[in-house]
Image (cartoon, rainbow, N blue to C red; front, side, top):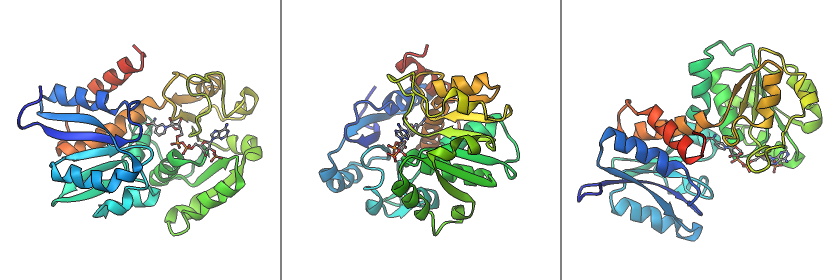
Length: 289
Ligand code: NAP
């Protein structure tokens, strides 16, 4: 129920109608019995600055940021956390001392399922990441945070790969990071303890696609973890091939849930976020039962 005292949260994007965040966050808010509402806020890129000022004027507690505003919003923040700075993108904004603070909860979202389920020492381990787009940046930063000895990023466009590598030049991440063209995939997979798909290959409706063929996947060590950022279908072809190989598999749903949990912790300033309720709300919305 909306009251005279309802506090505002939301997601800015353009378009924003496809966002799953309102369903997930409002389920948590309702479960906690809080007087908050989380709204979809479509903001045309040319209106971003005035919209952010407007959100401040109406006392918005915080908001999520999605495409195309994740980089464009950075100059409008009074403060950006080192994590968001490292990734070069903001996905969560909160209010501190009447100023906007930008952070990025995708790293927490990515590493949480690895840390909670498969807690181990990654310091002698190799991570292989497929794709070099926005999500790959959070995955690289996450793998660095977990302490991986080597982080290999595989891409299809050499110029973009080089740009990706150069963008980390001033970061300690550069020491452990190497970029490779796609033809090195088989050789790299055989060294991987963690293989992550950050490309959209295999995402609904192209469910028969996979960034790794079944023959290439035969090189994955049987004790490796295969992690697909895609959350629909479940499992993707990529994860099916990895499972046939005996590997542990993780799909993208938990990352989606955990980045949302991390954002709510910031906005509500409490730790008892109802993760199960958020997960179930998302599954229902995605038709996953
Ligand atoms: P993005 O910035 O567009 O990056 C996509 C990357 O995949 C690019 O490096 C692109 O290569 C590569 N790629 C695309 N098609 C390819 C193909 N056919 N073969 C080889 N490489 C290909 O997208 P993003 O924001 O990083 O998102 C990537 C995926 O992660 C999406 O499926 C998204 O839904 C998912 N995701 C999930 C979560 C979650 O919470 N679970 C969070 C974020 C993203 P080029 O650079 O050469 O174009």
